[in-house]
Length: 264
Image (cartoon, rainbow, N blue to C red):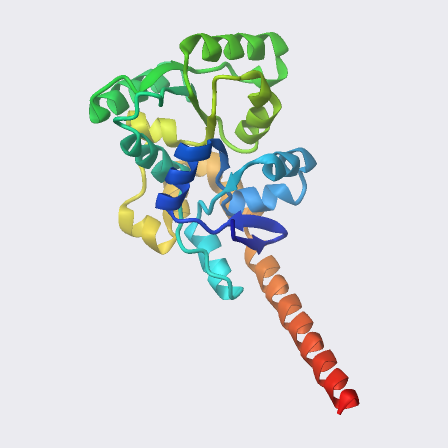
């Protein structure tokens, strides 16, 4: 698979259609890097390890896509988790082998998402859900309970909406214990969106890279620090990467000319 490296993170350059076919044929773990994730990865070795072990790292952000264009290696398509899940269940609506377990969201919200998704698809494609308590990832007994629920459900797909970095770390830690699961999707707030619990941004805002602004307006207390402080250095770091590329390219060209002048 071709990949575009942004801030030392290789992002797979796949279209949505290519990703869905690969998942159907081979399975795997999908993570969805956006600006927030790329900044967290710089200071979180455990998250970085989870990303390295993921099979697919797909662009979740129009801003990240713009950065790839600026760096001279365009990512062909933005595939956010909130776009991937509906595309996935529509793609597999007649595939009886696909049975989805939703893990995440507040109590009752995942169940609402289950009902709405199944209604859209016309079958019980989402076969069970669980909304874990706060801090569950530090409670091994609770994690064992969750593993048991997933195994007992006969699900073949686990869609985890716990937010980064919790969801990525949990998937990588426990995936080998979930023998019946062939596809793992880290999908952030998608369960809330599917349930209608939280509104998605208007399509035009998502298309131009302003989905973050819409979410900030909707949840300022929760998201102001992420978008206005933690993600702010991203632009400068991308510019720095571009300058390094240009210096490397210039040095390479100089060495090439010098080598050929000597041979001449």
